[in-house]
Image (cartoon, rainbow, N blue to C red; front, side, top):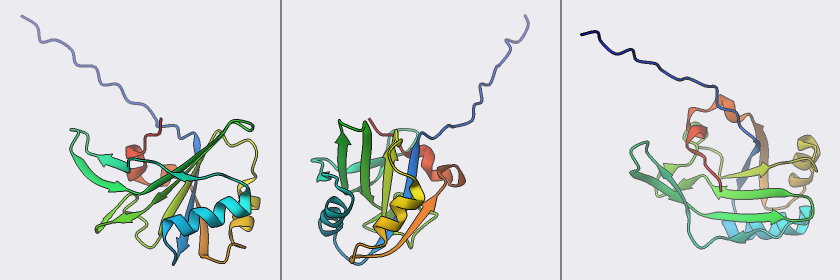
Length: 143
């Protein structure tokens, strides 16, 4: 009897979002308010936190999340707190307080958006990240 062949399927993860790190000394609701005022969004806190799970489905951490789905421009914004109870959404960047994710972004030039965000008084620093440079971005799933 011959041994059955094993086929391994590998693929490169394609990320369809912009990823911006934000450092701020304010709470998430105050930061969301500042973003709403400056870039004309309507970020609101979702009822359930964003949950990071292991591949086996075990919850690793949960993080405060705000979202805005712009029906006019067809862009989705997600603001997620990076650190909660000593656990990180993106552990490779522990000094970043929040991440702003933009899906289907065809409205903003990211550099222009970063310039706008730097004008918000509650923001200390803004950084553009390439999601492909972090292993933990594999855990990011948005509906």
